[in-house]
Image (cartoon, rainbow, N blue to C red; front, side, top):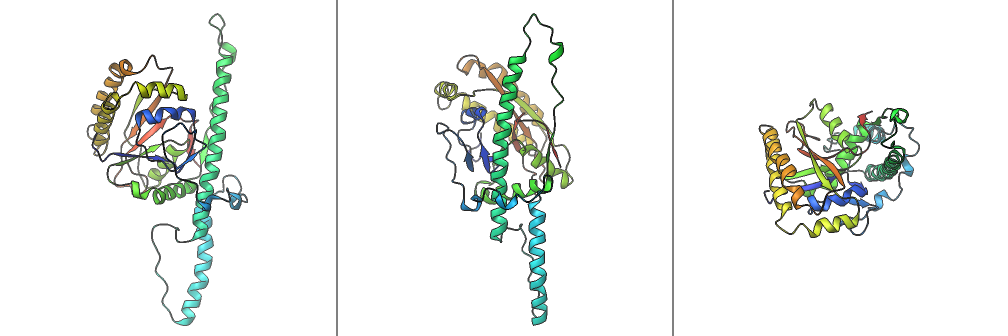
Length: 319
């Protein structure tokens, strides 16, 4: 894989999931923001939570569910203040100040609100992750024995989580601002949050984009530190990790013009099925899905080529 490929985690505040013990095996140089409740044994260096997030969302509590539109609230707040300032300038005979592009990041209040939203979303994601684990354990307990009829144990239909499109754009822009130094040509967002797929889907849909071509790979993984250490010791420098990076890089190059993504994906899938199991320590007890979403260069916000951790939580739709 070219040396300039760089993977950057999304979202900015990244809550811990036990499944993420697999990440350092496949992405040892992953760039991360704030690691939320991560164990010390994972070899990533996160940044501290800034003072702007210290309020922990207290300033946002008055919003009713489904009406948490910080972007709109900020615009209403600034517009009322700017109208008064425009009147004062007009009375003085001064020209109106030009609008500053690039989002409402000149004001400390908006900066603080955006960080508080990230903390609230991280707390919510940790809670829902625990719910997912409890449901997984319950499903194992209620699994019928081989001699039992599976009739009466059918679950209820999956519920869908609703995401506010305004919140999606706010979270994306905060991530772009904080991780901007890392988002250079050759960088690829790796979506690791429960609602992160829907954030980018919403941005593309609002910009007039459609369903981008995508491919999915099933990879072996680990969910404990002991399993991670065993796999890490069995993967010396230049071993299967280098081969994986090279083949993944070919897929990412093919995803940019959307010309040969399927062909490159077939080669990577063949290698995963035929070669990787022989290089893995023992039989993997668990697998996970990695997706590549082709980029949409004509879309300014959210049109990047993406790597996506598939299957985190329930289905999510824009609200």
